Image (cartoon, rainbow, N blue to C red; front, top):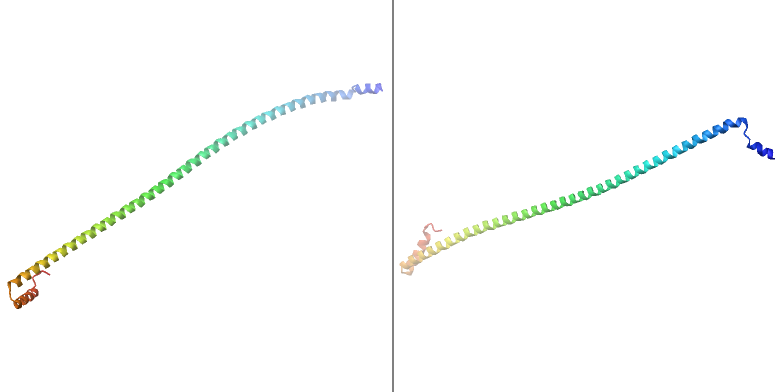
Length: 162
């Protein structure tokens, strides 16, 4: 049995090339594995750096988007407020115009009333003068018969007082 175990340890002539080739291949494979592992690590680092860069860019873009949204909302609120102020100003101007028109109408009506009052006053004065004149004339004629005729005669005359 010892021979068999010794024989197992011995190298046969055809096996020498295969063992050498196998050792060289093993070294080559080991070098390739190391190279691939190094390349894999480099790619992982590059991937991590790219993910980190894109994540930071996404955060920056989200912050920029939030800022722009806030500015847009502020601008919308400001525009709405300006619109409301303009509407209030228009309503105020319309109200002022209506008040001015009402005041003008009242002034015109007051002028018309003043004219009517003057006409009435003139009519009353003229009527009073006419009555005084008639009374004076009738006083001049002392008899009752003559007084009545005189008044009727004077009433029939047209002095342009009417």
